[in-house]
Structure formats: C-alpha cells, structure tokens
Image 1 (cartoon, rainbow, N blue to C red):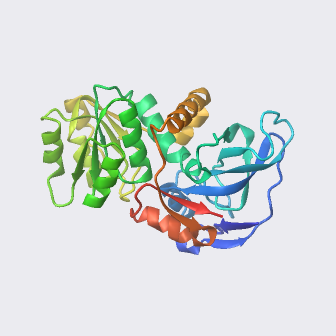
Image 2: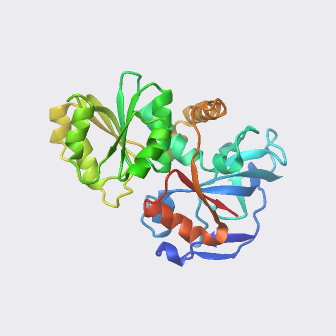
Length: 324
C-alpha cells in the first residue's frame, strides 16, 4: 500500500510517499480501508521529534481516520466487514489502510460523510472534553476562543453554543471572523492592530472572561491571562503560534482563576468510559445538526506535506483532510 513515511525526525518536507506492507488484523484489532484522514497541528511536531511522544522510526503519521472495515481479527464480535467507522489510530493514518484496536473504533451513522467523520475526533473531541470535563462550562459563562477559525477553534465555538454559553471568537482577519460567526460565535474580535485586552474588557462589560479556550500560546496566552473573570478557567489547549508561554502564577492568585491543562489523548486512557460517553453525545449532536465539521480543503495522499503546512501556517479555516 502507499503511505506517507517519516524515516527520521526532520522537517515536514522530508516526509516520503512510499510503499509499505499492508496491515493484517491481529487479535482484538481491525483493518480499516481509509477513505479520509484528518490533519492536525501535532502531526507536524511529531515528525520533527518535537511532540510529547517520539515514536520508533520509521513510522506513518496520522491519528484520525474514517473508512470501512476490510479485516477483523480474532475476538471482535461486535464489528463487521464493510462497516463505516472512525478509527483513532495514534499513528498510521496517512496511508491507504491502517490496523486499529477494536476499542478505538466507532461506527459512523450513514448520514455523516466519512471525510467529515475523519476530522471529527481530534478537534471536536478535544473541545468537548475541554469544555465539559475541564471547564465545566455552563450557560451563565462567557467563553472566549482563540485561533477560532481553525478546526479545534470552530469546534469549541459550536460546542460552546450547544452548552449555552456566550461565545467570543478571536481571529486574525475579517474573513476568519466571518467563518467564526457562521459557526455560532456571538462576537468576533479581529485582534490585528488593536488592543485585544481592552476589546475583551469592553465585550465583557469589565468583568473578564469565565472560560478561555486557548490554542495559540505566546502573547495571546498572556493577554488572555490578564483578561480572566473571578473563578475563571484558562484552558491550555496548544501552542499553534509556536511559543510556549511562561506563566506568572501571581496572576492566578490575585485574579482568582485556574489554569487548566487539556490533553485529550491522556483523557481517553484515564477516563475511557467518559470518553465513550462524550463520543456518543458528539455523534448525536452531529446527526441533530448542532455541530458540523467544516472541511476547508482536501489533499491527495501524495500532497500530505502541503496539507500539513497549510495547518501549521495557520491558513486553514476549519479542517484539512487527506484522501488516499
């Protein structure tokens, strides 16, 4: 089969399209013929050796896929050949086929397109876990979302509205602001050339923000940390801007807010029952039309480098998917 392979930790441009052995379903696992794979910011960090985990080389990147089951290993009585599924594969998604533990496979309702399903897990599941388990978001809260036109940002906007919060999106262009509003944001702030802290203060009537879904890091994080309401929750999602900020903890003491880490991958391992309940709720919301994956662009497998670069350059509005 064809796959994108990382042979050494190096810039994304060094990834290679090459032939790899086709997977065979071992005990407790299935093989998925991949229809589409979601592209995520950590994919770039992983192949450069900059992520929290460093896989053995060589490896195939790609953490979320959707497709149909083509093989079933021993001890998997509840799945069937030809079934449409989402697969959470950790590695191996940028390929034509992937072997996935049956415990990491979720059947997809017929009315959800597979390319949208492939991009549902990481962005929406992260946002859902962050707002539900980590922030305990309520309908009385104001939620601020940074990087709001990206895949996980749009997911946070949509889920924040489902949970009843007032949502303020923060984007770098008017075009991105329009996308954020189309996905439910009540207010969008284009922070380019303005005092973002003053704008947040104005839009919260001086109170500050109850919950911040912070994806960018760097100066954006510092501005948000100075814009929190009493009993606020500043969610640390990621650092798409490239800089991991250093936090002056006296701010949390004086302003009475919490800095809360969000690592969805660890959540799925530590709280598997909560994770599965979350996924059931997400799929229900999707079928009901309350949330939706916005696919910005589709790339061929051979163009995976371009797909990753579009995400890391923060040029994407929604999600990017690879179609093997």
